[in-house]
Amino acid sequence: MVAGQYLGFITLVMISVIAALGLTIVPDEWVGFLGLIPLGIGIWTLVRGLRRNGDDDDDDKITAVGLWGVAGITIANGADNISLYTPIFRTSTPADVAIMIVVFLVLVAVWCVAGRLIGTHKVVTETLERVEHWLVPVVFIGLGLFILIESGVVSRLVEVIA
Image 1 (cartoon, rainbow, N blue to C red):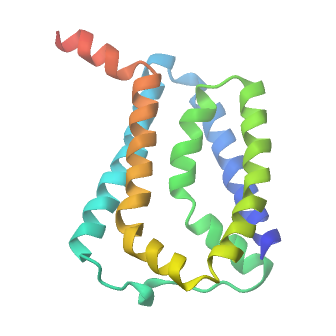
Image 2 (image 1 turned 120 degrees about the vertical axis):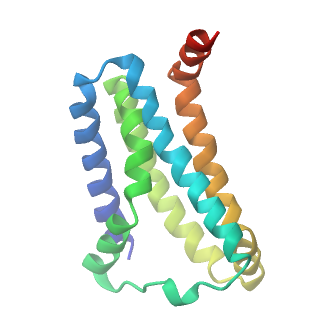
């Protein structure tokens, strides 16, 4: 399972790095608009989760088995990762990107261990199920806003409007 997580995650990081390199043709002042992608995903997911109003969506969950199954599910669920990593990689120095990737790789192991420990505690899983419909979208909204603000897009828009 862990090897599948790594295979899928490394694939997502490679796609993001290639996409970030492809974006070098886009002027720096426009790259920050990519923050609209995670912002939009976060808002859409939050609205969808609130509309479900606690409906159990266990029927939608897929179980993966083996290296390729876990890697495939990781990649299939990775569009949101790519939408976050690409603008961050594009606006960072190569050294910073290398450090981020190393940290990410270490944290994959941490998340796998945490998932194993947390997933076996009924109280924790029940609590996470109650807040998942808003917790993850809030993180995406926050990251989207961070990208928009840190890239200077928001300040440039305010200057244009004023």
